[in-house]
Length: 629
Image (cartoon, rainbow, N blue to C red; front, side, top):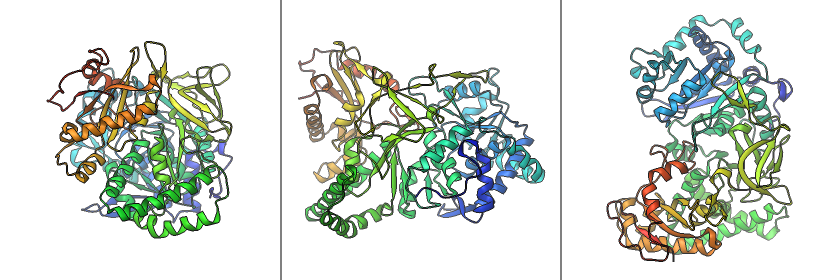
């Protein structure tokens, strides 16, 4: 249901601190924030909304004592832990602007953000972060003056979060706290979110209280959830999706946020808590699907066929809902039995049996992944938006969805397509512009207020938006043909063995690809066939695996037109990730980084004329040049 909680004013007039004041006054005894604690991390510590506001007030006094003033930018590099979440709110109550930096950012990216934001203070987690931040204190081009460290044991001579909290407890004055937050206005900046830098230096997107409050209210109207539902918060707060879902929307709904400090532990938390909502970027849903498929591959034929029959019923039911049709009574009854006897018991093992709302965003979701989860009664409500639009622009919802699309515009947002298919948008949730180094804002709209998103798409007759690709990522071949790399990559990734792919061909006469085996499913596929290999590299070198990958490329090419077909490819031995630089922290592909890192391999795919044999594989990395059949 849409939240029925009283708003402390009209949405466009609300500031974030007003929501926290309402929550403490009207829902003070409800759980607000939980995190794992204790020697083993098995216990949960919880603050209710009254306790959250008291802690925020104390921290605000502590940050004020550091000299933080209205309008100051304060950088934060920490995982999803209470010091991060509470400090973010405390800074907002002072009128300061919290700016979260991705924990996987390279030193040069951190230096750019510190210099560009003009921040004097940064709050960091521990020793790993200090190693990248301490050099900036001695850099004359960076305004940074002080570091606050959450892990006291790693702090050294730096100020600790604990001492800041203690000083805030001594200095806190309720009247000063109330006065400070009431001086905030809807048009004031609430946060600056730096883009993840897929094509260059991160840009600072300044978002106001009004941008965010309207986004939260309008998204809430499209989300079907119980009141005060729990949210598993595991994506970085540097990502606009988690800032909306993990901070701003819970404040609107007086919901319960459970912090998962280690993103790789989210599956464990899901199994324990059985959430009613779950948001994952496409790569998360892909990996979850791969894990389920790996388990299914080990089951006896009879059990697997029973599950497949239940999957078919669930997909048939989803198709009726998708078309807005009444579900036939016989199908509904059969699905209900299959859900109770087959699907729910298996989903329950993974903690997925109570899900009422599931969503994805940030990149096109592969349709085979969407259909896979539909077969388990889980309809992923794909959405689309950007940091510059305060998050969601379009979203599927239970009362209207098309699997594979990214839904219809939220209330108050306009869309239109430029002649080249680029999506343009305008509305009150669209940002004013990019932050300049001097603190001013560079407008990014045209004279009529339209913002060019850089995404290419189409609108169908029912108003649903379908994404094609990023405008800057479209491949233009040497014969002038436009190719969507995401379309080709998602098609070849429909084979369970292939977890990641990059297609290249700009200015070339044909496409080539780099392929990576799926880390979860490839070992299971091999084990089911009696193939022993201790690593992805070992599997990538195995003849049977290579033959299957060749068939996967052939099957993908059969569904693509001639220009889109992969003519040659390399099977790589290692998975791509944020730590190694090929993915952003939000798990989007950094194409430029991959092309630079594997430039010699890509060039090698074009060295011999297409159609001629290319010789032996490179044995050092188990990577071979392969002609597509």
